[in-house]
Length: 298
Ligand code: URA
Image (cartoon, rainbow, N blue to C red):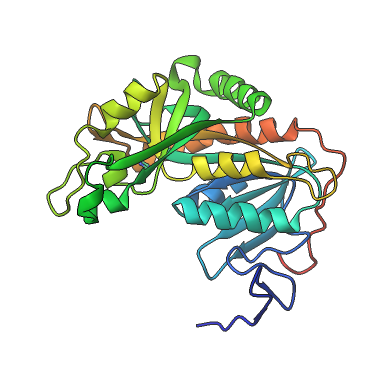
């Protein structure tokens, strides 16, 4: 196992300035970023780059691919799954990029609307769904609800409209859905999946979500952290929000019809969506780019 000598327990970086989990340093990450869950999806998307500048896997499961598309640097980062991985990714890339960032998540989800496996859901907003741990283990808190559902946080409206329009042009408008995403702290209990090995009290969770948010369309595990961190991001000098974010999700699971996507359909969706996503980012205008890929790191 590699030994990482890090300095600074508050925000660990190695001797070459690489962050602890994502292993990115200044010059590695473009201002325009796509984040995916699956490293194979990242590699498939990177095939559309005209040139690859950097490809690097971290010891904690992140894969960074930075390349040039239509003369513009774009970085694709695969992060695995879950809120913590999204938190590592956003904070550590933000720390090494100068200037504003636009981030598009291109992930997977379960559909709780009419969208079927292989369709795309663009998340206009996201809310968190967290297991209320005390409800299950503290008899005095049994009266509390078993799941905590947060308020919604909006995606960046301009970036979202641009992405959704391009995806509809490329996939056909009947294959692209929009609405609010429920971002859960588990694939199972807090997404309303039923099982007999644990007490989850989640039989009524999906109807509860739909009652609270009439535009509820999808369930996954990362978007709310992205939207939340974008909303609270701030430029150190101006104090202005420094990250814009939006999200397109491939429907992997139809939670109503109980169907799951095939590997072929997933690959087709990636092939249809990649250029729409890259073109959305290319149209983002920034004053400058912080990208100076480090020689020899490709
Ligand atoms: N990802 C999730 O978190 N849930 C699903 O149902 C499918 C993909």
